Image (cartoon, rainbow, N blue to C red; front, top):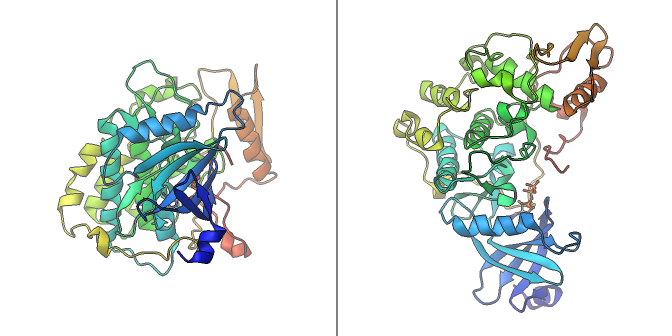
Length: 400
Ligand SMILES: Nc1ncnc2c1ncn2[C@@H]1O[C@H](COP(=O)(O)OP(=O)(O)OP(=O)(O)O)[C@@H](O)[C@H]1O
């Protein structure tokens, strides 16, 4: 760091020299900084405490507690945590890039061995969480950070929470929609490590396709697109489904062959994918079982992290998404037999009738209606905005 840089930088807590802003997330700004004690480059997540009147940010405290308990080569290390000028500062090891940048970089070719390596590191990090009864709950490619040594590490445990108590109720709207498991989309209040497995499967699919796999514009649309990809689940396939709080019946569509979605994938790849994308969370493969799947022991061996292709460090690339137009039709929502809620598809679009309170689902259908007004065609699986000369929309999160 030059003298000028040092003068421009602000010293925090007499130890960290703040440099540029790396980005802003749900909880606040993230800075690059130098630890003057060790010379190490770090990332400081500054969490605003001010807006919490009582002065305690439980989410932040939860993140600290969870992170302290998780020490693993595939989990980001929390180096320090301290309050400063009314903000809570979390100091993490600095990571050069993330998996989203890898996937989006058109100059990077990902071989089957590279994909295997990224998936293996993701699952190893998750296995370590699950062994300690911790769910990540916000798995998505930009939360999988990549270090200078090529190691992938799970980050952003802001929403993670210790589970184990059988009647613990979780807020279900925690996942970025495209990575959300079907049980979450149907409003389950009790869920387990299967939600992380589903998200990891979405990331696996994204590594293979080089675009987000299922890009729903609402929870209803997300489920429709999942069902278009894997077939509408029959109650015999997932017995608990019909009892889920937000269950609505979807028009039945059969499953297309998995190979038609991933034409270049090996048989082992398809087998593992189908086990991770199992509808019934009780039958879905666990992270540990996935790591023991023959996909990882068969050739090619996973690429060593140091040899993995790297995107330019953060901020250097103006990435654009690859073309991903896929006109697959999603099944439509039918009336759920148990409830007095009716969701009907009309010629001009959806008409929604519900006896009683208007709920989120209805609002979502209305949202869908707005997007599909006076048309009878269905939404494509994913939309390539580059066709219109614009950048793709930001990935949805619960806060944006
Ligand atoms: N340890 C780190 N090293 C380098 N950059 C980091 C580190 N942690 C976070 N960042 C970067 O800081 C920015 C904000 O990250 P943050 O985790 O707060 O939110 P996010 O992942 O972008 O979004 P969300 O909060 O919705 O998950 C991102 O660009 C992220 O890549």
